[in-house]
Image (cartoon, each protein chain N blue to C red):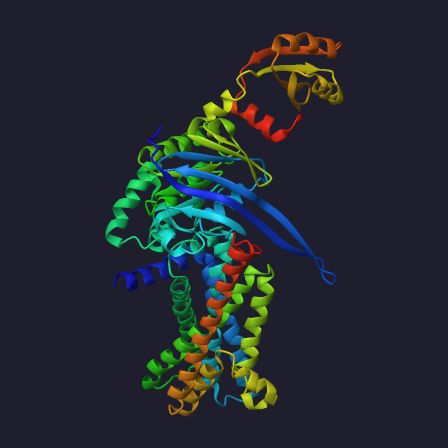
Length: 262
Length: 329
C-alpha cells in the first residue's frame, strides 16, 4: 500500500516540479487555446472536404490527437527538465526503482492528455452541434486512455534522446507531426501509401484513431478489445525500450564515463 | 572534534581513465587519466577534506564513492560495501550534495522537495513529516517551508540542499564544494550546519577550494593534484611540516613580474607567490631565513615602493600553494 501511495505522490510531485506549462496563463494558452484552435482548423477542413460525412468520428480523432502536447512535449520534460535542473543525477543515484519512477512520472501526463482530449471533444461537439451515444462515452475514454498511454511510451523514448542531443524541440515537433500524419485522424488510412500504412501499425494512436471513428461513426464496438490490446502491448514495448535507453545512458555515465547525467 | 573510531571509506590504488574519440572521419582515441592510483581512508565520524586545483580529480573521486562512476582499477570500499557491485545496498546509507543553486526542484516548495526526495529514498510516510520538519529547522528554513524554491536566495538554496542530502539520515555525507559562491554570512551558517551534523555522528567528506574552510572544519585533509595524492594529514600536522618555514608578505608598487620571479634563484626562498592587482602586486615568499630575506627584498626592489611587509607562519593555503603550485604561483 505504501508503494502504491508513493507511486501516485511521485507522479503528482514530478508533474508539478517538471512540467513547465503549469503557470495558469501559459497552461490556458498552450494546453487549452492552442489545442482547441488546432481542433477547430482540422474539423472545419474535414467538414468541408467530406461534406460532413463521418464528421463526429473526425472530431473525435482530432480530439485524441491533441494529447500529443502531453504525450510528446510533456513526457519529454520528465527527463529534459530534470536534467536542466541538475536533479537527474540525484534521481539516478537514489535507491528508487527507476522503471517504476519513470512510469509514475508518465501517469500524470496520460491523465492530462486525456483531459485535454476530452475538453477538445466537448468543444468540437458544441461548435458543430453534434452528440454521441451515451454508451460510447466510457468505451471512448478507455480507448483514449490506452492510446495516450502508448503515445506517452513513444514520447519517453524520444525524451531519452535529450541525454544525447540538445535539439529536443526539433525532434518533438517531428514526432508530433508524424503522429498527426500517420494516425489517419484527418483522412482514411486507405488513401495513404501501403508502406506508410504498415509503418503506421508501429506508431501509437493509429489504432485509437481507428477505434474512435468506428465507435462514433458506425457504433461498431467489435474491434475494441483486439485493437486496444495491440495498442496496449505497443505502449508497454515503448516503455520497456525507453527504460533500456535510460539504463544504457546510466551505463555510459557510470562505466564508460562518456556521458554526464548532470 | 569527533571521536575517531575506524575506517568507513577505503580507497586503494584507484585509477580512472576517460577514453574519448576526437574527429568525425579519422577518429583518434584520446585517454585522460583523471585518477592515477589514489589511496586514502576516512575514519568514522570525521570530516575529511579532499583539496586540489580544478581538474585534480576531486569530483571524479566523489562520483566513484557515491556509486555514480566506476573506477578503471583499484579497490574502493564504503561502509564495507563495494560501490561498483553493491550500489543498490549502499545508496540508502549515503547521500551527496553538489555546490551551486541547481539540484533542487525550483517550482516546488522546500517541504515538497524534501518530501519528494524522501520518497526516492523510500522513507515511510509516517516518518517523513517529522523528519522534514526537523531538517528544515536544522537549516533554518522552517518559516519558508511552503514557499517555492525559486523565491529563495542562493544561501537558502544551498541550505535546502543540505537538508535534501539528509532525508535518508545518511551515515556518510559527500559535499562537493558546498559553499561555492556563497556570501560570508551564508558560508559561515553552512559551516555551522556541517559541524552540527558531524557532532551528531555523520561522517563527512567534502571538497572545497576555500582553505580556511578546510582548516576550520576538517579533521584530516588530502591534497590531490593531477589525480595523485600529494599529502594526507590533519591541518595542524600539515602546517607543522613546514614549521621551519616563514612567510614574508609585502605589497610592492612599480615592479615587473619578472623581477619578482628572480627571488626563486635565492637558495633560502622555497616558493614565490604573487598576485598582480590594479595598482600594486602582493607578494609572498616562503623562506627558512626570513631575516635574511628582508634585505634581499629591498635590494632586488630598488626604486619600487614596498608596503605592509610582515613575517608570519604559513597558513594552510600557503602550504597548499607551496605543495601544488611548484616554485612560483
